Image (cartoon, rainbow, N blue to C red; front, side, top):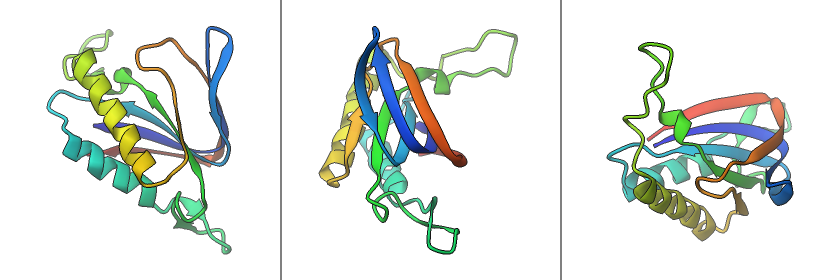
Length: 145
């Protein structure tokens, strides 16, 4: 399971010209599900993202987590994170999980975040989405579990 995370001042998802979801200060999470990923991977990743200290404290040091700053999370499915660009000029998606299972794990990941009483918004699995964000920093990390 891969997550490209961006610390944002705000972010939103628009589908077919209609605002679908939005967050203020928090994390925009692009989530890629790979073959062989399990609920255990989702649990570990969710815990990591909730407690990763990438928000600034009063001394401008990255020392606070999403939960420490009462931030929000926007989770968007992103199967292209599983793409391999090493050979040729067309990405291979052989490591991406099949859509039905990927959606199950995407929904499971979201449920774990909600159980942590963390404000979470989402995109729509498999939909064409317009994502807007203001990256805070910029701060961007790739996290894998």
